[in-house]
Image 1: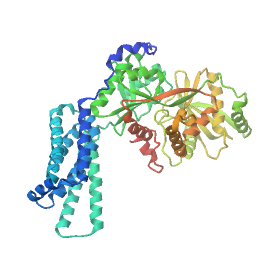
Image 2: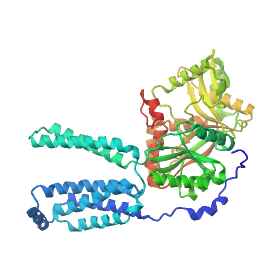
Image 3: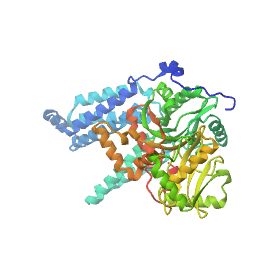
Image 4: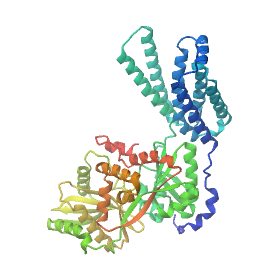
Length: 539
């Protein structure tokens, strides 16, 4: 906010928070989650192995025919269910606890009914007592918005079960119909369980007042080159108590993805992140900070997050860039070729884009994108025309737009938000645009131009060990979709400074889900088609 003086960041000023680092010792709910997994695995193993003959004879003599066999199937099903629920229990989900109580009681009875397995039943009863004893620990609510679809899904499952029972009573025999009913029931049951257990959803709710405050903070305190991208309309905002700092985030698949890091008064960053972490826990979300600058790592670690290097940001200094020398020979040739072809360069602020130019820019963007979703979350704008101080660097031939760059302001200069060109234009147009943009940025006094954020730069360049070599081969196989290596090679043409960026998570086991959520929010998992533009925004 105006009048707030930024405080230099460093490791020393955060040492006093080390006592607040969350303990790595297992909590009670984590131990109960692990115990549920053990009871489930024991149940699965017991259901898949033969019973003791003397005990089985006792059960078969007491219970009606078919009951021991049905109990074996139930023990197997309930055991698998407990293994599946164990993670949700460890995260204190109330609905997971409710379902676990039912499954533990059921599996204990099933163990007795299938073969008088007293040992397995006793293990289940001990867990049941512990779950009831520590029930108050499971205080994370489910999603209230899931009640209506859950009721309709449950009704559909009940209808299918009734239909199957009616067909069985009437002696209807048709394997394909029976298989179809069973398969559909399994799918709908899985859907019902997902709805029951999913965490609280979080719709995008940006008020005009929030956007006003965020705009002021970004423009006055936006030190990070990613700060301006917080102005996207598909992010929620979490403010400090004073509203002098905030963070931008979006919840995808139960993961709260924070874009970059906090923005505003730096002395508030620790408490802001710690409070947001508490909110995430209360709502059952996992927490991940994306594209974190190295300066923020002491704060992230102080609240118990683990940092993993995600990649490097390619930053070019306009004053130091030159087309002289062998290292930039190909770039120099591309620029000369485009100039001979009659291309010209201009910059236009978003505030000065008229209807005709906007139509041309949108045409180029649509042709470039094709049927694919509009990508970007951490380092792209959802609407390049909305913020008036953003700049379009445009290449024309004979008055017709052939390509453009979209630039957003940063404290040190500009960050590149989008690159677009008409596929009919000559190769090298992007190199021409960047070289001309660097010359323009040098003339305006900009210190830096942030080109791209390249993930897995170390892994793709110099893998260590067999596992990393395999990972590199997988990434290269996916390069046609993600274009990771191509982006790195393109950025290297301009001899940038490589600045590390990190992803911060609470535990390493969260990484797979965080990776999927990150790919989704960046629209890298959105299939091409007419729904691509919509699904890229509405997750």
